Image (cartoon, rainbow, N blue to C red; front, top):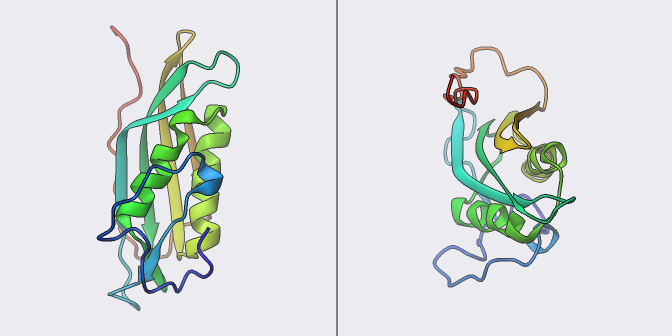
Length: 155
């Protein structure tokens, strides 16, 4: 993990970086918010997120959408991509993976507000969607719909 959220020299930006072997080994880089004091939303979408089922060891797939209103720092996108990629060999239930990603980012980055939607593809015929947010969004923040339809199959 980063020593401080105020890190100003990202470790991954402009460097060749290997995929971390686990989420715990992944280092998230944070840079100063270039619009400090402004209320705005940043969205990251990971439509091909993968982790492993802790029961079968088979891959689970999800479309993750992460929204946050930054305060002092923003997460550097390459480090976020490497962090999310580190779940490819990580066993975890959908709920633990989704909420864990949101909580780690919230705890380290300390944004005004953060939410994550995990839209998991069916396992055993049942799609699982998992949502977490840090609290109510700040007044005046435009929070668009995450734009991911519930799984309908052939419906």
